[in-house]
Image 1 (cartoon, rainbow, N blue to C red):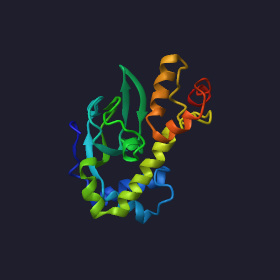
Image 2: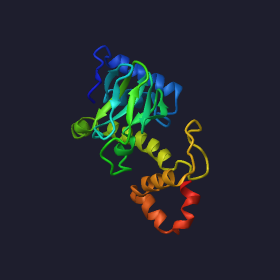
Image 3: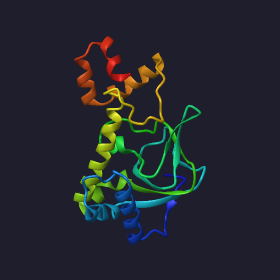
Image 4: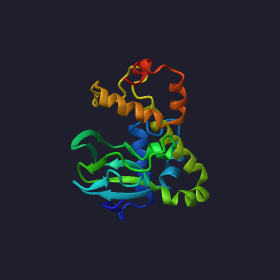
Length: 203
């Protein structure tokens, strides 16, 4: 995470308050108690970013799971801004939940304004599992829940994010099919369907 730096002014009590706000104002921690969210907040490292900085860069290794706690960023792909990530948005959740074999970022994420992101570096995961196994398990649950909503994007004909519209053309359909086929469960599911019928699922 090259551009970001440790937010030294955020101590344990401030980290707790940041996650309390996420707990109260979003469904990010749905199903968890306030005490569980407090414990989860202690596992994360809080990094700050500045407007215009790259939070992650296309083709760099995905080396952390992150939750935006303050500020916003946008995903830029092939010279176009594809989506804005606000408070509660995640980065790296697909890899955290083991829903993809992809090791590198598909797009660059740039800070839209100054902000803070809570991160769990993958390089420290084994250490954190030993120290806080229950909290790490719950973080995996949070990541998996978000990853599953990505996997099931539009499977039931419902736009999960109405702001991001897919244009129906052969190239995008092919990219979407490739994305689904990277997941073993979806690959097994789609193998039982004739290719001509896949369009009803992935379009």
